[in-house]
Amino acid sequence: MTDIEELPEHVRANREAWDRYAHEYVEPGRRSWSTHDVSWGIWGIPESDVQLLPDDVAGQDVVELGCGTAYVSAWLAKRGARPVGIDNSPAQLETARGFQKEFGIEFPLHLGNAEDTPFEDASFDGAISEYGAALWADPYAWIPEAARLLKPGGWLMFLTNSPLVILTSPDLEADGPAGTTLLRPYFGMHRTIWPDDTSVEFHLPHGEWIRLLRENGFEIERLVELRPGPDATTRYTQIASLEWAQQWPSEEAWVARKRA
Ligand SMILES: C[S@@+](CC[C@H](N)C(=O)[O-])C[C@H]1O[C@@H](n2cnc3c(N)ncnc32)[C@H](O)[C@@H]1O
Image (cartoon, rainbow, N blue to C red; front, side, top):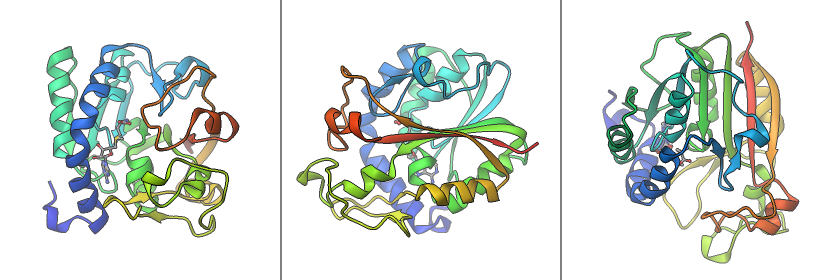
């Protein structure tokens, strides 16, 4: 395990932030662990509507990069996969370990940075991140790391905020969710620090995601722009209203495969 002083500054900032946020993720995490029904993102869009996972993950080794309370790994385990979770927050992992005992589903959980993991080259059939590394780790580090971890032909799925939501969200959360005005540049988008928080997020323009994924040996299979249904609800009302998210994508999922 890397000493905290050796971690990049944004990883240290995000560890401190996520240890602070962790208590808010216990009950939502428990609800997700309690169900077999896979659903994604802030609107809980059913997997059956969007098919972000391979049809059959049984017997696959899958790494979850930034697993948080690890309910995605638990869903994969229920589908017969062998998940391994890595997360940067001791507090989030403590919650995940508690759920493993509560629900009787055990898999390895590691404390660490998804940009620089302890796992062997080509040791996984799949890599996944729902608002984990996908949002909180530097893509110029974690995408090459995911490529290193995957076997040839291995799959990658990650889900994060859309660029549109980042471009149209006011600086301060108190000023409301995403609106209809572009508030910051699209070109050059990479590292985002909101003035009312200490955490560090990462977002890229679409062209840059495509370039980065291809440069690291991935073929992109799909970019799914998630649209909630008319009755969808979210506890993340600070991100986007339902009316907004039905008109513009508030979140997106990239599905890619490492070239064989
Ligand atoms: C929103 S949670 C993601 C888990 C879950 N899918 C969810 O949506 O609640 C974000 C997680 O990313 C983790 N994280 C942030 N930076 C990370 C990094 N560099 N490496 C690994 N995990 C990281 C945080 O500790 C946190 O547990």
